[in-house]
Image (cartoon, rainbow, N blue to C red; front, side, top):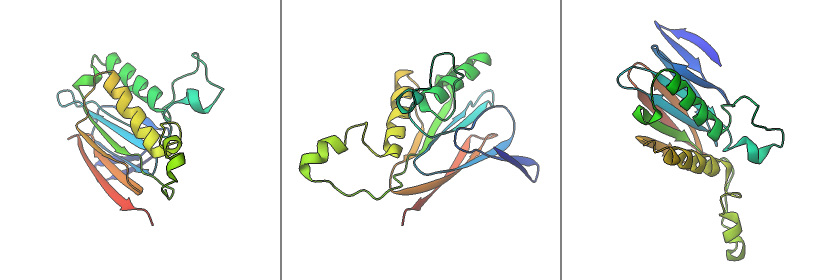
Length: 178
């Protein structure tokens, strides 16, 4: 995570796996391809958070995980668990936050497969990584009954996201793939 001052408001760049939560007037920014960012903003207390998720779950992608490991913001299930813990530590439930989701773009050219292979290719396990990330985040938030106020996800390309923690405003710029 890199920090720089822009006027009086600190700008912080989130890289894959970064997760921030707290209070204060900052601009959080990140660049997303197949990764997904979740932003949280509490309209009453001003608490906010943002993460940069790379994969749905560590359990599926590595055999080096066990329950004693520290949760990691790179994975959707663990990032949401971290946000839940940080919210509870401050007496807040995630359902109270304005939650927005960005990213999950398809970064590789996708061509329609022959009909015989179509069912296999469109299964959740073989979908493009961006689509897997988006599905995981929506499912995890839905399981916790956390409403999503905005989602700018999918398509072929990438996004630059800027989150203004004082107001909860988010600006997402989409750049189509070539």
